[in-house]
Length: 255
Image (tube, rainbow, N blue to C red; front, side, top):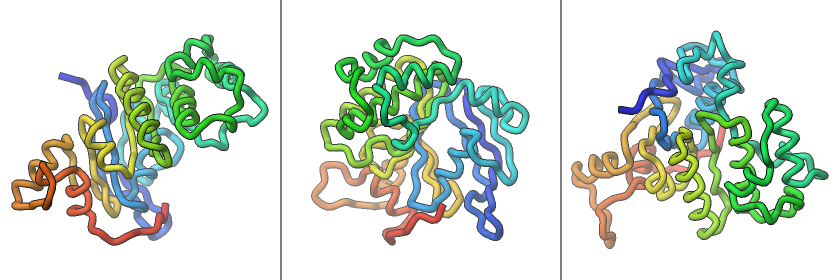
Protein backbone atom coordinates (compact mmCIF):
# COMPACT_ATOMS: atom_id res chain seq x y z
CA UNK A 1 0.00 0.00 0.00
CA UNK A 2 1.34 3.44 -0.94
CA UNK A 3 2.28 5.75 1.89
CA UNK A 4 0.82 9.22 2.34
CA UNK A 5 3.25 11.85 1.04
CA UNK A 6 1.05 14.95 1.53
CA UNK A 7 -1.45 15.32 4.36
CA UNK A 8 -3.72 18.34 4.70
CA UNK A 9 -5.86 18.62 7.83
CA UNK A 10 -8.58 21.20 8.46
CA UNK A 11 -6.91 23.86 6.30
CA UNK A 12 -8.28 27.41 6.37
CA UNK A 13 -7.21 30.52 4.46
CA UNK A 14 -8.91 33.87 5.06
CA UNK A 15 -8.40 37.21 3.31
CA UNK A 16 -9.98 39.62 5.73
CA UNK A 17 -13.63 38.60 5.95
CA UNK A 18 -13.41 36.38 2.86
CA UNK A 19 -12.74 32.67 3.47
CA UNK A 20 -11.03 31.19 0.40
CA UNK A 21 -10.39 27.77 1.96
CA UNK A 22 -12.79 26.45 4.58
CA UNK A 23 -11.42 23.58 6.60
CA UNK A 24 -10.43 21.14 3.87
CA UNK A 25 -8.66 17.83 4.53
CA UNK A 26 -7.15 15.35 2.08
CA UNK A 27 -4.19 13.03 1.57
CA UNK A 28 -2.01 12.48 -1.49
CA UNK A 29 -0.38 9.07 -1.90
CA UNK A 30 3.22 8.60 -2.94
CA UNK A 31 3.59 7.87 -6.66
CA UNK A 32 0.09 8.91 -7.77
CA UNK A 33 -1.16 11.61 -10.10
CA UNK A 34 -3.57 13.59 -7.95
CA UNK A 35 -5.91 16.17 -9.45
CA UNK A 36 -7.28 19.17 -7.59
CA UNK A 37 -10.26 20.38 -9.60
CA UNK A 38 -12.64 23.27 -9.14
CA UNK A 39 -14.28 26.31 -10.75
CA UNK A 40 -12.43 29.63 -10.83
CA UNK A 41 -12.24 31.06 -7.33
CA UNK A 42 -12.98 27.72 -5.66
CA UNK A 43 -9.79 27.80 -3.58
CA UNK A 44 -7.67 25.21 -5.38
CA UNK A 45 -4.82 27.55 -6.33
CA UNK A 46 -4.71 28.98 -2.80
CA UNK A 47 -4.55 25.45 -1.39
CA UNK A 48 -1.68 24.44 -3.64
CA UNK A 49 0.26 27.65 -2.99
CA UNK A 50 0.04 26.95 0.74
CA UNK A 51 1.41 23.42 0.25
CA UNK A 52 4.14 24.83 -2.01
CA UNK A 53 5.16 27.23 0.83
CA UNK A 54 4.27 30.22 -1.39
CA UNK A 55 1.34 31.45 0.69
CA UNK A 56 0.70 31.48 4.44
CA UNK A 57 -2.26 29.57 5.84
CA UNK A 58 -4.67 30.95 8.40
CA UNK A 59 -4.91 27.67 10.31
CA UNK A 60 -4.74 23.92 9.89
CA UNK A 61 -1.93 21.44 9.41
CA UNK A 62 0.06 20.53 6.29
CA UNK A 63 2.65 17.75 6.22
CA UNK A 64 4.81 17.00 3.16
CA UNK A 65 6.84 13.77 3.21
CA UNK A 66 6.80 13.82 6.99
CA UNK A 67 7.83 17.49 7.20
CA UNK A 68 5.50 19.90 8.99
CA UNK A 69 4.91 23.08 6.99
CA UNK A 70 5.12 25.28 10.09
CA UNK A 71 8.45 23.84 11.23
CA UNK A 72 10.27 22.95 8.00
CA UNK A 73 9.21 25.13 5.03
CA UNK A 74 12.76 25.32 3.67
CA UNK A 75 13.16 21.55 3.82
CA UNK A 76 9.87 21.13 1.95
CA UNK A 77 11.10 23.46 -0.79
CA UNK A 78 14.04 21.11 -1.39
CA UNK A 79 11.84 18.12 -2.22
CA UNK A 80 9.18 19.75 -4.42
CA UNK A 81 9.18 21.13 -7.95
CA UNK A 82 6.81 23.92 -8.95
CA UNK A 83 6.01 24.80 -12.55
CA UNK A 84 7.18 28.31 -13.39
CA UNK A 85 5.15 30.83 -15.35
CA UNK A 86 6.50 32.28 -18.62
CA UNK A 87 7.70 35.42 -16.87
CA UNK A 88 10.15 33.32 -14.84
CA UNK A 89 12.58 32.80 -17.75
CA UNK A 90 15.35 35.21 -18.69
CA UNK A 91 14.66 36.14 -22.34
CA UNK A 92 18.30 36.35 -23.44
CA UNK A 93 19.35 32.86 -22.31
CA UNK A 94 19.17 29.61 -24.28
CA UNK A 95 17.38 26.60 -22.83
CA UNK A 96 20.58 24.83 -21.79
CA UNK A 97 21.78 28.02 -20.12
CA UNK A 98 18.49 28.41 -18.25
CA UNK A 99 18.83 24.88 -16.90
CA UNK A 100 22.37 25.55 -15.70
CA UNK A 101 21.16 28.78 -14.07
CA UNK A 102 18.30 27.10 -12.19
CA UNK A 103 20.52 24.15 -11.24
CA UNK A 104 22.91 26.64 -9.65
CA UNK A 105 20.07 28.11 -7.61
CA UNK A 106 19.33 24.62 -6.28
CA UNK A 107 23.06 23.87 -5.86
CA UNK A 108 22.59 20.89 -8.19
CA UNK A 109 25.10 19.52 -10.68
CA UNK A 110 23.00 18.56 -13.69
CA UNK A 111 23.56 17.69 -17.35
CA UNK A 112 21.27 20.08 -19.25
CA UNK A 113 21.22 17.91 -22.37
CA UNK A 114 20.13 14.85 -20.39
CA UNK A 115 17.26 16.84 -18.89
CA UNK A 116 16.27 18.22 -22.29
CA UNK A 117 16.29 14.64 -23.60
CA UNK A 118 13.69 13.72 -20.98
CA UNK A 119 11.26 16.23 -22.43
CA UNK A 120 12.27 15.72 -26.08
CA UNK A 121 13.87 19.16 -26.47
CA UNK A 122 17.53 18.34 -27.17
CA UNK A 123 17.27 19.93 -30.62
CA UNK A 124 16.09 23.17 -28.98
CA UNK A 125 19.01 23.49 -26.55
CA UNK A 126 20.29 26.66 -28.23
CA UNK A 127 16.83 28.19 -28.68
CA UNK A 128 15.39 30.88 -26.45
CA UNK A 129 12.20 30.23 -24.52
CA UNK A 130 10.23 32.79 -26.55
CA UNK A 131 11.10 30.90 -29.75
CA UNK A 132 9.39 27.69 -28.65
CA UNK A 133 5.93 26.51 -29.62
CA UNK A 134 3.23 26.28 -26.95
CA UNK A 135 3.79 22.57 -26.39
CA UNK A 136 7.56 23.00 -26.27
CA UNK A 137 7.23 25.79 -23.71
CA UNK A 138 5.13 23.59 -21.49
CA UNK A 139 7.54 20.65 -21.81
CA UNK A 140 10.45 22.93 -20.87
CA UNK A 141 8.46 24.34 -17.97
CA UNK A 142 7.93 20.80 -16.69
CA UNK A 143 11.64 20.07 -17.18
CA UNK A 144 12.50 22.92 -14.81
CA UNK A 145 10.40 21.28 -12.09
CA UNK A 146 12.70 18.23 -12.26
CA UNK A 147 16.02 20.06 -11.80
CA UNK A 148 16.24 19.46 -8.05
CA UNK A 149 15.16 15.79 -8.42
CA UNK A 150 11.96 16.40 -6.45
CA UNK A 151 9.75 13.80 -4.81
CA UNK A 152 6.65 15.83 -5.74
CA UNK A 153 5.91 18.20 -8.63
CA UNK A 154 3.03 20.66 -8.95
CA UNK A 155 1.63 21.38 -12.42
CA UNK A 156 -0.88 24.22 -12.77
CA UNK A 157 -3.07 23.77 -15.87
CA UNK A 158 -0.13 22.45 -17.93
CA UNK A 159 -2.03 21.91 -21.20
CA UNK A 160 -4.08 25.12 -21.39
CA UNK A 161 -4.05 26.50 -24.94
CA UNK A 162 -2.32 23.49 -26.50
CA UNK A 163 -3.49 21.67 -29.61
CA UNK A 164 -4.68 18.05 -29.20
CA UNK A 165 -1.39 16.52 -30.28
CA UNK A 166 0.64 18.66 -27.88
CA UNK A 167 -1.82 17.85 -25.10
CA UNK A 168 -1.46 14.10 -25.63
CA UNK A 169 2.32 14.43 -25.80
CA UNK A 170 2.30 16.21 -22.46
CA UNK A 171 0.04 13.56 -20.97
CA UNK A 172 2.62 10.92 -21.93
CA UNK A 173 5.38 13.00 -20.31
CA UNK A 174 3.41 13.41 -17.06
CA UNK A 175 2.76 9.65 -16.91
CA UNK A 176 6.43 8.95 -17.54
CA UNK A 177 7.43 11.26 -14.68
CA UNK A 178 4.98 9.45 -12.38
CA UNK A 179 6.22 6.04 -13.54
CA UNK A 180 9.75 7.04 -12.48
CA UNK A 181 8.52 7.52 -8.91
CA UNK A 182 7.61 11.22 -8.71
CA UNK A 183 4.25 12.17 -7.23
CA UNK A 184 2.36 14.62 -9.46
CA UNK A 185 -0.22 17.16 -8.29
CA UNK A 186 -2.11 18.71 -11.17
CA UNK A 187 -4.83 21.30 -11.65
CA UNK A 188 -6.80 21.43 -14.87
CA UNK A 189 -10.11 22.69 -16.23
CA UNK A 190 -10.19 19.84 -18.78
CA UNK A 191 -12.22 17.04 -17.23
CA UNK A 192 -11.22 14.56 -19.94
CA UNK A 193 -7.59 15.24 -19.01
CA UNK A 194 -8.24 14.58 -15.33
CA UNK A 195 -10.19 11.45 -16.20
CA UNK A 196 -7.34 10.05 -18.29
CA UNK A 197 -4.38 11.11 -16.14
CA UNK A 198 -5.41 11.15 -12.49
CA UNK A 199 -5.42 8.20 -10.13
CA UNK A 200 -7.65 10.24 -7.81
CA UNK A 201 -9.20 13.69 -7.90
CA UNK A 202 -10.54 16.07 -5.28
CA UNK A 203 -13.24 18.48 -6.42
CA UNK A 204 -13.25 21.73 -4.48
CA UNK A 205 -16.05 24.29 -4.58
CA UNK A 206 -16.45 27.48 -2.53
CA UNK A 207 -13.54 26.49 -0.32
CA UNK A 208 -14.86 22.99 0.49
CA UNK A 209 -13.90 19.59 -0.91
CA UNK A 210 -17.18 18.13 -2.14
CA UNK A 211 -15.90 14.89 -3.68
CA UNK A 212 -12.70 12.82 -3.56
CA UNK A 213 -12.19 9.50 -5.32
CA UNK A 214 -10.88 7.97 -8.51
CA UNK A 215 -12.47 9.36 -11.69
CA UNK A 216 -14.07 5.99 -12.49
CA UNK A 217 -15.67 5.71 -9.05
CA UNK A 218 -16.99 9.29 -9.18
CA UNK A 219 -18.52 8.59 -12.59
CA UNK A 220 -20.06 5.31 -11.40
CA UNK A 221 -21.54 7.08 -8.36
CA UNK A 222 -23.19 9.65 -10.63
CA UNK A 223 -24.56 6.98 -12.97
CA UNK A 224 -25.97 5.11 -9.96
CA UNK A 225 -28.16 8.13 -9.17
CA UNK A 226 -29.98 7.61 -12.46
CA UNK A 227 -28.03 10.18 -14.44
CA UNK A 228 -28.14 9.54 -18.17
CA UNK A 229 -26.21 11.28 -20.89
CA UNK A 230 -27.89 11.01 -24.29
CA UNK A 231 -26.03 9.78 -27.37
CA UNK A 232 -22.94 8.64 -25.48
CA UNK A 233 -21.55 5.14 -25.21
CA UNK A 234 -20.96 5.64 -21.50
CA UNK A 235 -23.72 7.23 -19.50
CA UNK A 236 -21.50 9.89 -17.92
CA UNK A 237 -17.96 11.19 -17.72
CA UNK A 238 -15.97 13.17 -15.15
CA UNK A 239 -17.14 16.47 -16.64
CA UNK A 240 -20.70 15.44 -15.84
CA UNK A 241 -19.67 14.77 -12.22
CA UNK A 242 -17.97 18.17 -12.01
CA UNK A 243 -20.90 20.15 -13.47
CA UNK A 244 -23.46 18.21 -11.43
CA UNK A 245 -21.57 19.02 -8.22
CA UNK A 246 -20.56 22.63 -8.87
CA UNK A 247 -23.30 23.97 -11.15
CA UNK A 248 -23.42 25.38 -14.68
CA UNK A 249 -22.96 29.08 -14.00
CA UNK A 250 -19.80 30.76 -15.32
CA UNK A 251 -17.68 32.28 -12.53
CA UNK A 252 -14.98 34.90 -12.66
CA UNK A 253 -11.79 34.12 -10.74
CA UNK A 254 -11.49 35.88 -7.37
CA UNK A 255 -8.28 34.38 -5.95
